Amino acid sequence: MTFARPDHISDRDTLPQMPGWVTSARGETLEDMAFLTGAALNHLHLVLARQDVPRALVRDRLALRAAEACVAFSGRPERAGELRDAVHLLRPGDLPGPAGEVCLMWRRAVDRPVSIRALGRAMPSIDPGQIAEWLDVGQGGPVSRTAAVLEAGLTEAPRSETPVLILADAALAQALGWNHLVPLLAVGLKRTDLRKRGEELRLACHRALVSSAAEAVRLADDLARRAAQLEAVAPKLRAKGAGEAVEIFMTRDAVAPSALPLPDRAARRLCDRLVDLGAVRELTGRDTFRLYGV
Image (tube, rainbow, N blue to C red; front, top):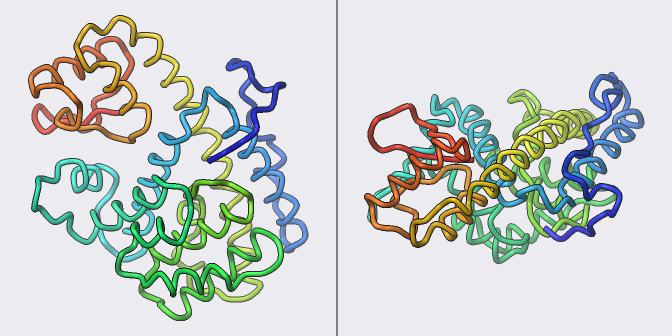
């Protein structure tokens, strides 16, 4: 995602919070909600423009939350912990399972700049021509275009919630001039919203984007502080490959020691050292097959 860096928000200590009137207001009409959504998305844009916000990490964490929502939409029981296991503990030749595949789709979708080719890689079961067709259906402002993509996809493929929601977020990113998809809609929509059409669906999209943009701002603030702590302790690390390991933690929601560029025992020692330094957390609560994240 490419953003200009505003000079007046370059200080880490002044990361702006979402104004309370944006999230507390109860917009009942499309006009009211359009105003609130514009304010929320503009604020999120400014926050993601900051150099101290680990944007790839924010996107990957939001991808996990979007995957969790999509899995719930389909009636499956897996939540964040199971989804992390499904994708980060895969061995060569293993299949991730239906829930794990949903998580992988979202992670692949946020990893590369938005394009038909990149979206095709993220969702190989969807024909690139169909992707292009759905992305072109929307007209008007960003949310109207996004809702149109969502409506077209859900009408033609009502059981393909995950690909359709990915494409709707891609359409939003394109309309806002963002290079990367930021998962917002799936996190904010309710299951019943997916059955709405027309003005009701647009209103649901506005409400979803206000709430999810506010949550994304809070997440960005939290991860910026955690990333700053990881950067602060990085010079204390002596292991060969520690610098590359730190970069991996800065971009991924969860990391298995086996994914680090160190021998297995050294990787596990490094992860435990980072936990002791307060730079990363162990995410599973297990003694074995552990995962770590900022």
